[in-house]
Image (cartoon, rainbow, N blue to C red):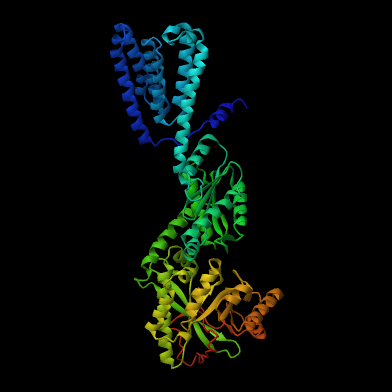
Length: 624
């Protein structure tokens, strides 16, 4: 208990940041010059105030002597600051003695306090307080006339020592408080009021240096915040970030520190190991699962979180902890977002591979590395092909065929998806128009729209230009969106889909049942097709509950006058169950794998004639 007392007392005092080395050295050089000038000045002042030459020389040497410690090899900040502070305070003591305790001479102490405050350290203030108490008390007792200029002080030296010490302490605390308060503006995020990156790193460095116990860092990034920001506006996005910061702050323990690192990134400094950090992280994910009201409308959002700790990393360094947590966070995004991932060895290499792949994406289109493959969608009652789904493939020059699940999320994250989507749309509509001309019958095509594409103000113009450039009739084009677009702004999504539908194209809801399924959403969306996700189709032959759920989706779609397409049909058993449930369309390896356009033969005898449904019903779909 007594061993911790100094640390506890020190914690009660205000404290700001340590100065950068270059700034500290620059200030230190100026203070050394001031101390040296004072020594020379005292040697010159002595004779003018009646002191003999020996006394004046002794005073000058007493002021200059502490400066000799600056020459010691390996002298650190503390020793150098102590040496110059002692020299300045010795000048104050000598000046008071030379002026026989003149009251005005004591003001020099306060000038010295202002000078040593430039070190932005507690040590010089403590030294000043000790010197004042020692000088006024001890010297004031032994030679009161050399310290005090009035009788009451000479007869009560310790009382006046305490009084002058109180003045020095008050001045010191004022400087310390000003130091700390002035820095609050630099160490706080102006939007949320939370700590910023600088304060978080410095707090972590202090804990790592002073406490051997494990320390962890949680790094959290709001999933798809850019889309929310674009749909609602920057002002609403700022209010959302403030609300997110409050929820995160409400999930941590006393002693943990929450910071906003910038943009939609937050971090939590956890005073504990990996298990404790995981508990805090899971609590935050759960708290953010509830929609947040912004301008009277709820916004559903999620975060991806990465955790790093000193036990796993083996390094006690704040920058390393943040880097590792950042890598883990990006791994959480790559695994599907809305989850917490702990840092593990190998993530740094994975991050480098990701950065290289992201860079390579920027040249994939002009280098001709992308190719569109086409997978048929069939009408189950007749077995005829009703259209094709456009699926993007990337032939990387060194990595070979890169899976879509690996590069599509990267394209969305790096904002390349808009340009890539525009290219796919142009290629797919051109190919469908070519096939239609060759077959002398309409060939339908379907293309995916990502959430970021849908939020793009130019998406309607992009679709219109693709149709005009290819000559493809709008009713032969189906645009697919996933349920994930509903997380951002339902009203904005509905308005955008209606604008697209006004062109004459059809709208399909992809992966239905895996995201934000809602009867109210489905009723409001201007959709023509519902696609049942492959995860339901896989269990159709053996899962009674799955079969009941699929039957309910089909009946729901029928009541809303929507077509239904089952994805991922691979066996005759699944095919038979779907036909028995009166599912209208399906696609999967059972009917045909995705193939390049040159391999597909819509104009040949192998592919039956395309039967376009009534205008309200869409045809083809696109699955990434």
